Image 1 (tube, helix red, strand yellow):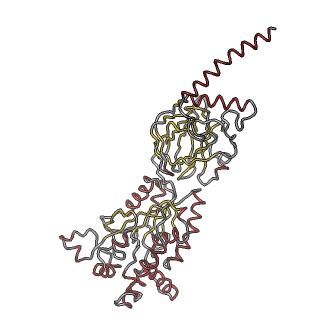
Image 2 (tube, rainbow, N blue to C red):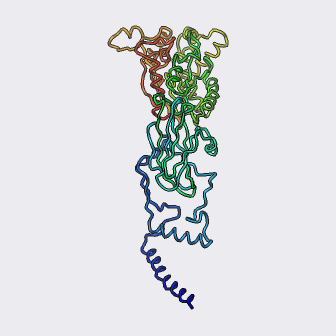
Image 3 (tube, helix red, strand yellow):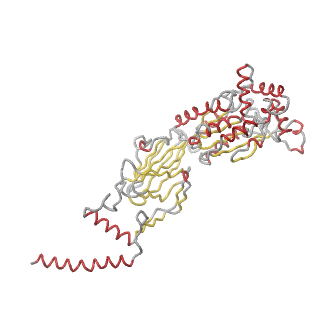
Length: 490
């Protein structure tokens, strides 16, 4: 009898509860479509630009609507009755801890933080930061919402599935208290920082802070800089010393780099093919995802060939060309008889300039001349080697003048051309305009053109033996260029 009275009471209580739920459903907004957000999150300011996403602001807060609450109760009831699927709470498929959904979150510049970041359920975030060798940085992870989270630092070329086993530091755990680590940087360049929720079934909110604490005067780019030389072989210039004193300077500052060694002179197809394995070796040596290419003269054209024809655009962040003849140089057209003029005189001067004396050297030099002619560059090379949209193209050139113009105060000449290329400067000045002795200003413009050096083609790389015009400091010029790449996150 007592059991029957309890059952009657339960039945009478159930009726108003059911009516209350029905009334709430009838007065509410239409049901939220499947897959739509049911929470409103505030995370300050969020800017997304692909690989360079930046997230800043306050810790996230969330508000769940009445509809969402009712929906959750309903789903939970279904799961408990055996009709639901997934994690038993929301009906979503269960997360696979071994295969989270990886989200590229972008680069964190030195001295910046990412605050109020939301890590989605079943997700993992991958950030990047750069630090120079012989420095130490502190990485701090703070839980702001949801589940606890853990971070790991790894080389950027590490496969995501191997990051947690190959981490360069112990896991950085953030629970009730913030987690952190002191990271002694093993080499200059970019590092990957992964963040995942300790419970993959739950979302997490976190702040991420990276700051330098030792060796902060040292510098680095994200990606190693490969210096690619142009013609070589004349007095005191060889592939190991072409950029005179530059390698020593960038190494002292902390920048990762490589000096490419190509044939002294040859067709761009040959030199470009010689460049690509050196790019591969640089990627492996520095544990990097990409490189930056900095090419002087033909070195810039070889680099374009490697990017476009040989398919290295996915491994190059930026190409900076210095006085590269993107539209060819008219003196080579003269030397090859592709334009009317004193062929024998010009070819003899060019061969002497590059130091080609044997039959094989002359053959290789003539191949190089052709690959830099206006006819080849404009009619063949450029149409076959369009810019890769994944690569940033930057260019500089030099400007010099003859002795007569230099002495003419009204012409405001800042640099006197080296006698070694005075003859070619005169030819180009008369036929094509302002130039550095071998390449015109107009031909050197490519991509994002950023200006002129007060230098001729030889001074541009600090030759010979670092003796340049007093108004041009080639060491300072290349120091500013690698800093420029670093500032633009290359």
